[in-house]
Image (cartoon, rainbow, N blue to C red; front, side, top):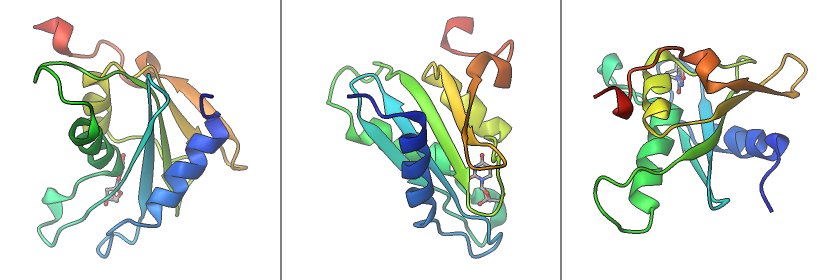
Length: 137
Ligand code: THU
């Protein structure tokens, strides 16, 4: 059975507890729901050279690629939904770089926490209109 939006937020929140965020003190977790029902999670991984920080969504996207069944190198997984939780702020919307990376995998929608912790679903096209993606080339 496919995970509910609330379950995806729970998985993202759990992943945020693994965050390595000594500089910002702003732990973030992401949970990607894939077409086959699998959920891949990630957390932010910061660096003393601040700009090298990897956001939770991009950590999860990298893990999604590593963990997929081996196939043609150009085969593109499809992200059905991406849940994002920041332990210090709700809602925690994906940053611009992460929107671009989620868009690479034709993410349909993003789920964030509303102010009362309830799931808020946002169509990806609303987050990143006129996106440059694989079909733009
Ligand atoms: N962060 C994420 O993990 N995802 C986002 O989409 C926004 C920002 C992280 C990066 C950094 O470690 C911390 O939040 C503060 O910017």
